[in-house]
Length: 165
Image 1: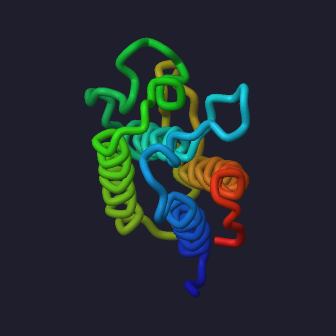
Image 2 (image 1 turned 90 degrees about the vertical axis):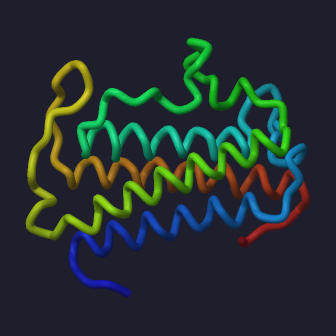
């Protein structure tokens, strides 16, 4: 276990990323695409795609300032495309895992350049010029992952009965 503010954020983020990884493990593409709580379009595959997009939005766009790359899973104009536009193919699952892992690798590389002292630094992000501290962005990411890890727990239990992953 690490000590310090940034280390604490990283520990929580790594924990919730691991929950998502475990909840998606050992399932077929069809199971990952299962919308287990009708009429919701929520599925484990959709969550994985969403979290890849979340990592890209907050780490690449907000924290790194990379705004010229295409947003992940945003081709149709549907604001919920990452959830709605899935069919459950092996290629789709591989693409989602690859995108998610790529975004995590980039995020972790950025985190390696930070320290407790940089957490209070402010940055402007999004088109509206909103200002937040790096600390606020990381806490938001942890909250986002924690909420979706709970969704993943319920989806996985509904798919095959496994709990406590």
